[in-house]
Amino acid sequence: MEEGTIKRLTGKGFGFIDTGTGKDMFFHASNLDGVRFEELQEGQQVSYTEGSSPKGPCAENVKPV
Image (tube, rainbow, N blue to C red; front, side):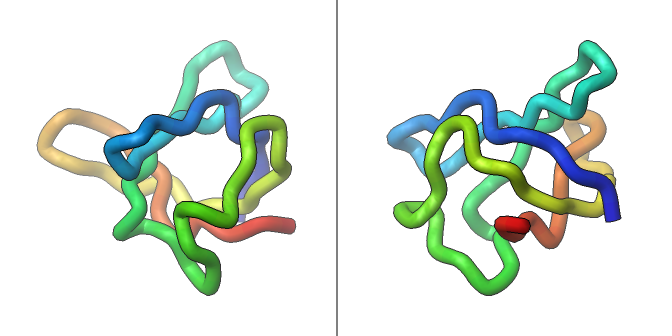
């Protein structure tokens, strides 16, 4: 699993993770593992696996570390 920091959360149930590589990773609330979207905070460390969606790469199995 990879780790990153939540950069931005939206009111529409998705957010972006700063991966530390200069590219942000998109995630949707349906890709969370063991945590509710409302419990996440910007700046929080999370782990994830890189997956793909029709629109490009995305984070899956997102959970706090």
